Length: 81
Image 1 (cartoon, rainbow, N blue to C red):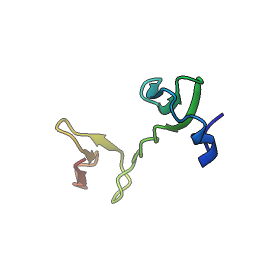
Image 2: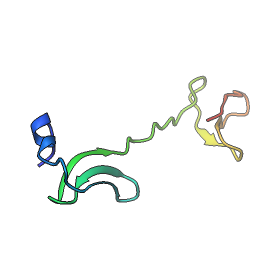
Image 3: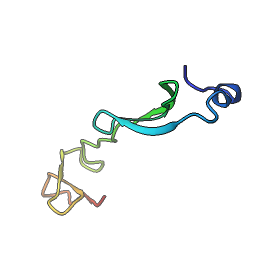
């Protein structure tokens, strides 16, 4: 039973509470160890993937020093992240 209200969470006052990670950092949860209940959890947001150049619509490629660039030698689009 997850804690959705004040009353739900109040039931766990004085219990042992931990924050844990599941999978390959795919999910993080606040758990009541005493009850064995996940009180609240969040999934890792999916990355935003940009496949095509916003200027010429050619394929974007990773650069060795970080960032992405357009695969077209004529375009010149480059973005640092």
